[in-house]
Amino acid sequence: MPAYQYLQLEEKEAVLVVTIRREEKLNAMNNVMMAELTDCFTRIREHSGVRAVVLTGSGKAFMAGADINGYNEFDMGQFFAFQDKGREMYRAIENCTKPVIAAVNGYALGGGFELALACDIIIASDKAKFGLPEVKLGLVPGGGGVQKIARLAGPFVAKELTMTGRFLTAAEGKALLFVGQVAEPERLLETAFALARDIAGQAPLAVQALKKLVDAGRDASLETAQAYDRAYLANLFHSEDAKEGIAAFAEKRPPHFQGK
View 1 (cartoon, rainbow, N blue to C red):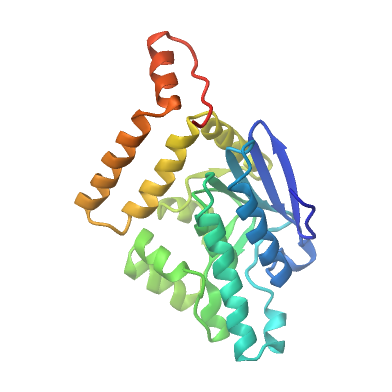
View 2 (cartoon, one colour):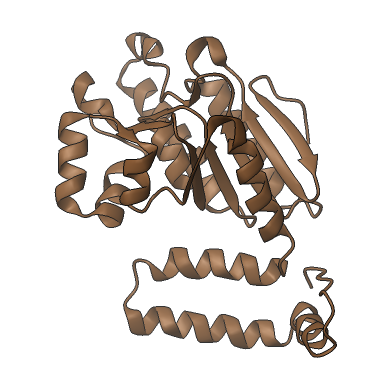
C-alpha cells in the first residue's frame, strides 16, 4: 500500500486499521482525501493479507463532513465534480470485498455520517455525534444518507433528523439500529479491532458472500433475496473452505481457512 497524505495505515493479524488524519479540520473531506480513500479501499480488494478493515478518525472527529470553506470557490460544475468524487469514495467502501468496521470516535457529520453508513458495521464511542445538518446550509445530503436513514429508521425519523439537522448520540444511534456497539472512548479501537479480528478468523469467501447477500437482499423481495441465499450456499458448498470447516467440526479442531 502506498503512503498517503491524510491516511495512516496499520496492518496486524489480518486486520488493516485506516486512520483519517486531518485533525486541524476535524478530518473534513477535500478532493485529496476522497481520492486517497477511494484508492485505499480499491487496493484493499486485492490485498490477500487483509481480511477485515477498521476505519477511524484521529482527534475529536471521525469525519466532520466536507470542507465547506472550499464550497465558496466552486462553480456548479466543480461542485458536482466534488459530489461525484464523494460518491465514488462511498462506492469503493461499499464494494470492498473485505468487511469494513467504522470506529466512530467523535463527530460523524454530513458526509462523515455517510462515510460511516457506507461501512458494514458501526462501533461508536459514547462521545460520538452523528448528524446530517446540510439543511442548515440550505442543502440536502448528497452521499446517500437520506435514503439509508429512511430505510434504517423509517421515513418519519429520517424527515425529523434531516429537516432539523440535529445531532444524534451514540446511544440514540444504537436505539435506531445503525450503531452496533457503544464503547468507552479509550476502548473504542480495542473493541472495533477485536470484532474485526473475530471476523477475519472466519471463512473469507463466506464473509464476502454475507456482505453481498445483506446488501443485495435489502432492496429485493423476500423470495428473490432467499434465492440469492440458496445460490451462494450452493456455490460455497464446493469451496475448499467449506470442506475444511466441515472437517474441522467433525474432528473437533479449529478450522484453518484459506479463502479458496
